[in-house]
Image 1 (cartoon, one colour):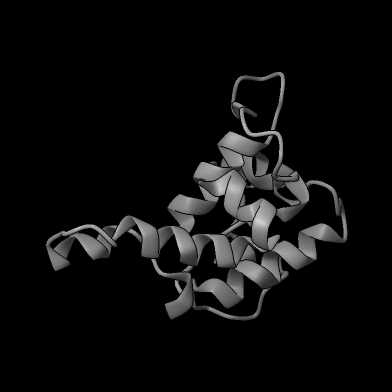
Image 2: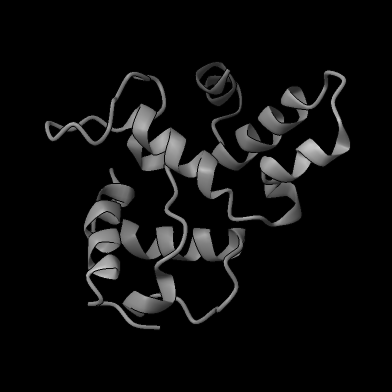
Length: 131
């Protein structure tokens, strides 16, 4: 679904919105909708961003699977960590924050802005990054 929709629209947020609509098109309990974020409502969509990172990026460390070849790593987004690394003034963890952090990281590597995620996560866990 993700690869074919990205090929059709070329825009990851639009793919996220389409996926959510398609996923919930079947009968379901409304309470289930809280488990899949809505980019259209401004959510950071962390689970979807991370899933795509694992499926799109390829590495030799075994972190990312790289099974999907038609979505470029340059299209991926990185949620969170923004205020801690000084590239984001917003305190909200929303889609605007995702776009701002990713834009800042694209200045370092436009082809793979989320490549910094693992090291930023490790620095946060190790206590090197403070809010």
